[in-house]
Each structure stands twice: as C-alpha cells, then as structure tokens.
Image (cartoon, rainbow, N blue to C red; front, side, top):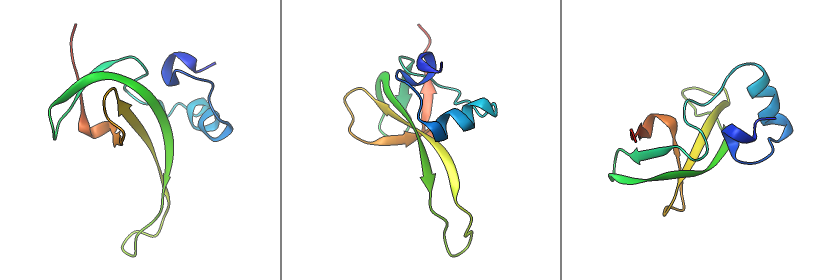
Length: 85
C-alpha cells in the first residue's frame, strides 16, 4: 500500500504511522542532496526509527530515516534538500 513511498512493503509500525497521516516529505527514488557533505543521489531506503529518550527529554520519538545511494548511513529528513530535475 505504501510501496511508492518506502520502496517496499511497510512494516506494521510503519503502517500505523502512515495511516495516521504522518508521511515523510521525501520518498523512495527522490533525488536529494545531503546538506552536511553535499552528497547527491537518489533515496534508496526509507525506514521508521524509534529514537530513545535522553535524560533531558525521556520520551521516545519516532523519526523517518533516509539512505542515499552511495552512503551506508541513514539521515533525518531535515538533512536533505530535494534536487529539481
């Protein structure tokens, strides 16, 4: 159902979040640039992360993570800039 966004079938937790309307602004296959290192490429993976709390903010958070072609790490949405074609 959400293959166009994630590039794969969504897990149950991802389905719940997506059904609530909390969609990532970038999706699988979008061309983007990672701001901090100016790396350009297409998004080849989108996953939902559960981020543990900190002593200053003990609540767990959910965050979309994106992997760009040629990189082995996931970055947050705020670290990406879309590239117009």
